[in-house]
Picture 1 (cartoon, helix red, strand yellow):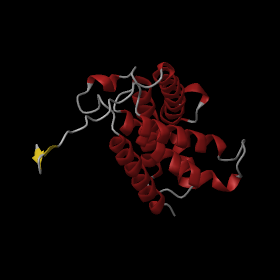
Picture 2 (cartoon, one colour):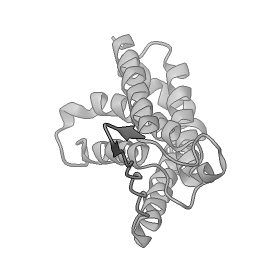
Picture 3 (tube, helix red, strand yellow):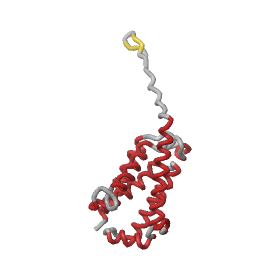
Picture 4 (spheres, one colour):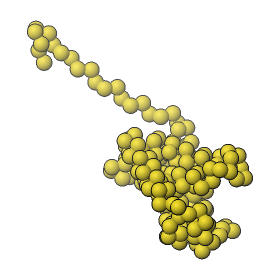
Length: 180
């Protein structure tokens, strides 16, 4: 393109550097561990597996915490944890899987906040799970994930993660507003 006798040269955009070799492996390990933990917690709620309370006792806990329709809320929490965890393990729909985990953890944080920071009654573990899910929503699943075979999610975009975290925050807040 000529501009007053000069040629305007366009500079090509720099190629996006590949992440360091250990990045995708580290993200995979994080996804696997967080996913396994969440599937375990979800199936404890839903089926009483792994020494969990099962749906009836979980519903009682939701009732005691002031949630309306406690059995329905227990099922939603169990499914969110189980399916969100499975999605993280597979790296499938990773931003939405992370949002499912984060939304559940927002409510768990609110219920347990008065127990202090450190375990056994504190929020440290729940907060760690919530922030790990948020980090995975933002970073994407890494190279070793089913998302790499989905056209829309093949190249993870930060906007997917931001939208997923926003969805989790809004859904978590709505559920909190329903509590007594």
